[in-house]
Each structure stands twice: as C-alpha cells, then as structure tokens.
Image 1 (spheres, helix red, strand yellow):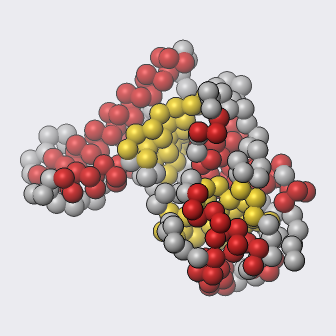
Image 2 (tube, helix red, strand yellow):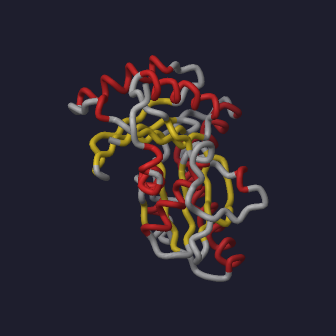
Image 3 (cartoon, rainbow, N blue to C red):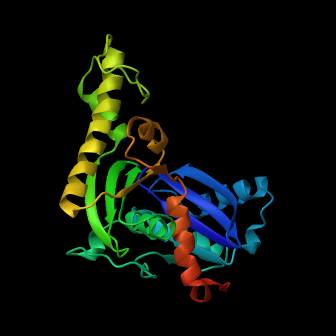
Length: 262
C-alpha cells in the first residue's frame, strides 16, 4: 500500500492507496512543531477507524511546501511504518519539464498538480489552486510547466481585512446574489467573492492573451467549487489533483520506492 502525504501551509493531507484505489484520506492542520510520534499516533487511529492495517504500507511519498515538516515525517515513516519516505524534488525528480529560469523555485504542490492535470485534461491549461495562496499554473501544449501567478489566498485576505479594520466582523466566504451590498457584512461578502472572481477572470484573460490561445481552466482546492459558480471559464473542479499527481509519480518510481527498511 502507498501512503501519500501532501504538506500545505495550512493543512496536511494523508491518503492510503492500494492498487490505485483510495482506501482512506484524512486532513490535519499543519504544525511546524508536530513530532514523528504525534503523526504516528494520529495516523494509526485514523487508519484503524477505516480498518486499514498500517503494517500493509510499504511505500511513502511526500510533497511539502513546509520544509520543517519533512524531517518528522521522514522519522515517522522510518520508525512507525518501517519505510523510507521519498520526498518530491528532494529524492524524486518530478516527471515533467519545468520551463522556469530557476526550476527549483516552484513549489512541489504546483508541480504535482500539473503532473496530474497533464494526464487528465486537454492541453494547454491553467490550474487554479485555492489554498493559503491562490495560484495560477500554466501548462503548455507539450505538457511542460511554464510558470504562472501567485495571489493572496481568499481566507488570508479576509483575515487581513478583519485584523486591520477593527469595526469589520469575521464572516464566512459565500457567493452573494447581488454586487451592491446593503449592509457591512453584505458589502464584505460581495467584495471578497466578486473581487476574487474579477481577479480570476482577469488573470485567465491576460494569461491567454500572452500565451496566444484559449486554455482549459481547472480549479482545485477548498473554495474551487464555490468560485467556479461565479466563473464560467473554470471548466472543471478537481479536488483530487494533488493526490492523483503523487500517485502518478509513485507509479513511475514504484520499483525504487517499494519495500520495508529495518
């Protein structure tokens, strides 16, 4: 069985696969000070609830944008699962061409998303990931990663707004029916939602103009479905993109990654 781990700035996602079938998936907050024992204790309980035998895990792959989280996850893999963890970009070269001035600058999550999207959708394409940051990633007609754009995430922007303006309340991100808000809360909702729709549509238009062709637009991440409702150019929402990308990388490196260690 494969244990795939995606460490994001806000959340860490764990998924167990057997013969490409997802047996279970769990999410926990990303903490820089979480120990190997804490990861092991949490995962053993979560896997037990789904009656998954942790001893069956013989391969572990990690994508991380939080360097401090990698070492305890490696230790957990070694001491609890008796496997070597393979970290994308550190131990395994991602199977995609990266057309950047410095390919090592791009986050592994963005590369992993692109790997999955290349195998699932028509090219060229734009991947919009609604995470801690809202990222736009461009994949050309040859399946190469070409870069993109990074904007503050929706929740991050909302948090900054409420912290900086003492009289503004905390609100949930929702899709308002109208653009002109008649109350403070309605005005905040329309500013956040329709403001980000404008950002999304504007960047899609500018990327396509610069690239020279209309592109397939795929959304992923927690708020992708909500914003797809207001952005018709987002043709598909795929919240399994990162895990499926890790699965693709594992499939191409299976012989290297399988096996227990003492």
